[in-house]
Length: 370
Image 1: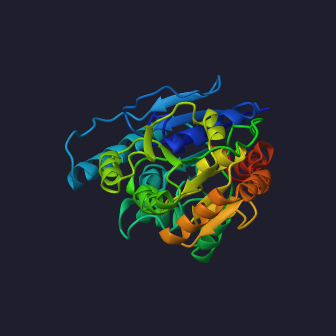
Image 2: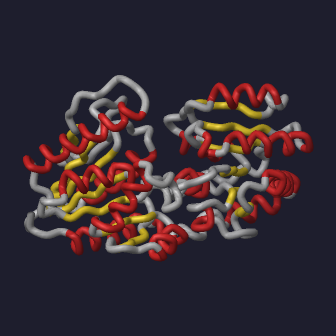
């Protein structure tokens, strides 16, 4: 059987990136089928970690001279160099399908490969609404909608939005493939700790989390809240924690290599993002039987949380309501225990075999002889 030649792009060789992790999960699963010859192409000429790729997957890094300056002109220079390097790369390679991760890069893949006999699919890792008009994400998304063969989005809400604006590209909804299994650990009903996980950036809403925490710990000072992750907002959050008098209750835990091994210590997971693609951390929490309280943003929470069954969906960004629901769960351990029993009720679409079958169908539909 001839193997189909596939290229999956990633922003950089950085396994701490959520995008990179889900790409690695998928290509490893596809590689194990024996049906494909897979190349992972990193667009940044630098990185900070190795990738745990299955044997036989080729990792390549796009080569160009990186501009060390900052600002708009540096970005323009970078994108021009990416496009030029991609053109050269595609002239030297032969792929039947290229899957582009990150809509901000779609324009450059189109410019580099539009005259090549190859199919293109955009793999959306955020959602339709992310990206200011005429900026790189917005432009790339619109190029992909008009010029690519398909767009893969993560959630049902996002699928409906894309379909409402559909131009040419076929829209397919496929959840991210995760490799972790449901935990054998029992739910720790005695825990008095809350957990949140994510990159310390404004989009993750940890500033609002602290507004919620100030209300919660006024009523329940014997509880605590741990935030796992690193990022550019750390100093700002540290100052706000001090300003709010939360130093004894809220801890910035930093990046944790084995976060899956930590969830079972906690009573609930709280999700405060302003925007999301899917929010894989919610799946991690649910695999560890945690109830979730989340802002019902686009997109992700409503795909895994059933209100009043395994958690609470809060209107964005009603911090008082979120604090009230958290306090209710603190005060009603029997409700937390019941929610824990139903944590994974909506995980059927996240089963690996189901997700892989959808990707194999997509690959079959869009591959042709290069």
